[in-house]
Length: 447
Image (cartoon, rainbow, N blue to C red; front, top):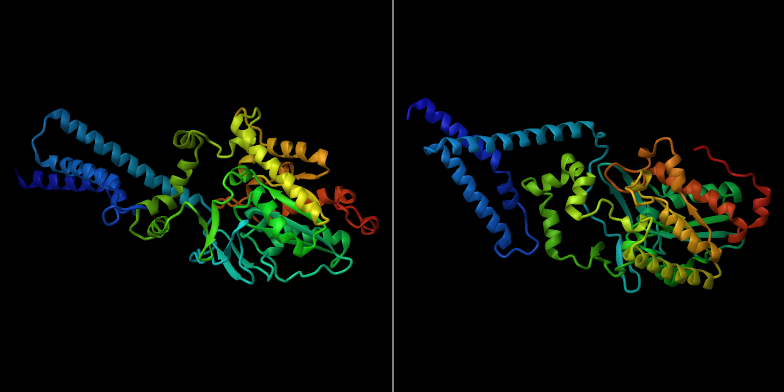
């Protein structure tokens, strides 16, 4: 074999090894949750050995005399792999260039805000101050001595003060923004314009991963200390899922903890943040996020496009009916706990980003609010649906973070303003001070 063909053979072998080694590197750098040998499962070892053997044979075949059709097939495989790799790299570069520039450097994960509770699952640790920061947002988090997000303790309600207690999930807690920019914070400012500063207090009692079952348990156990006049339950579409297994999320070492999680899950998450982790690269890839979010890919991977499809079904199947029945049952309990404390209940419906688009046939983005309203109206419970305001907004893309699923400050402001209007429209039924309302000017907000 002459020098030039030999040199070309080695070049082709090196190129083939570089282009085709990706899957092998994926398996070799993926830490298993329950490894059986060092960091691998038997399944990982099997596929790594199988693919590794095939890769060695493929690369080594350039030094063997092979039939023409084998050489053609080999060239086709290498060409397709090279094309896919080049296209993926180009797509990643373009998407990263199109994405908004990173605003912040993400802070290390050091939560320490949560404590386990035997009745609710988890609550906030009192008197904690944290800086929450991702590449998209930065906020200051502070809890008071009563374990809610606030910059002061409330204590016994002073005479002449009307107190609104807002309970809900992470959309209510609003960890992505500072306290005044959460929708309970906006609600507090909006109502103060009507009633006067110092005459009304809005308490943010939102907690991540709370469904209706958690809300009614929290109100039963903790709400009395705040002496509320009105309790507002902020509801989102994932309540139907969170209600199914109310004990699934608890707290451990200050962090929210899935009871199905193991130390291996934590180790795997931390391992994927390392520079050498190919699975970690893919988790952070803009292209992979786009691909995984595509409707066709979601349908292929999970068998459905919308994880909350049972919320939106126009014609409910048995699963949807069962999940709504759990919601109604817990709303009944929530209303009973509220009235036992001398307060009145209202409900705020907060949309997910997917509800701002036209869903697939058979799904209705307004179904959730419509069904909750049908339950609430005969019971005298006002329901304020913020979805119409979100859909009417001139820039709906500005209401949610691009990567985070929660609202931006603009989205939370829209929730707070719409909720304030809805509560004031039902002021008499909710027991707001009539003399203040008579003396105030009507609120108006341009959309």
